[in-house]
Length: 256
Image (tube, rainbow, N blue to C red; front, side, top):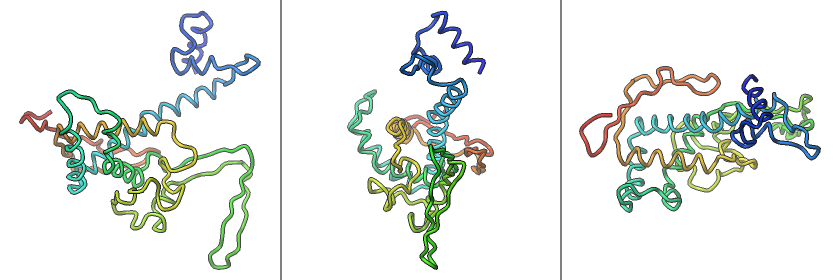
């Protein structure tokens, strides 16, 4: 809140531009009556959400991807093969265009499988403008029951769909092939990028993930430095010992 107040003073004294950063942009947002559109509490909430969305989610995905590469030799070999085929067409220092990223189909399927098994968030709380009606069908009596949520809130638990064998067969086993299609067998079952409200950072997350994995597997070899790669959730996954890795350039004997 102190930072928001400081930014407001800075704007009032015209020491910065209205769109200089996220907070000044939110402070400068006005309605049709030229009144502030967001309260300080709403600005704080939006800022925290964006910080988590742009950093924590991607960093968690990349961390678990590296863990899979270290623990699953067959998956690592398949990703290396796919990425080295792309690297062969590049000159030294040439950047990856979008066309190359679209060829990294298996790597992205592994990323989606990683998000299925270890999502950044296991619970989502959604508040709507009105009461929800949730229809539950009893398999025994085939009778639909209606339940109203008086506080207008619904909690989504990712494990309820990600670990459902009717949606993802043998869900506890790492199986990137279940994402060979554009969408899972049933709609809205993959919480990460699988619903009608598409994540605005979807393509950015894809670029960030694929680019990082490309340069990691084509230029380095890596292995875990710690035997203990267990983790807990608080509420996002946190590795108990961190996830230290030992990487070595493929064209050099010196370790980094």
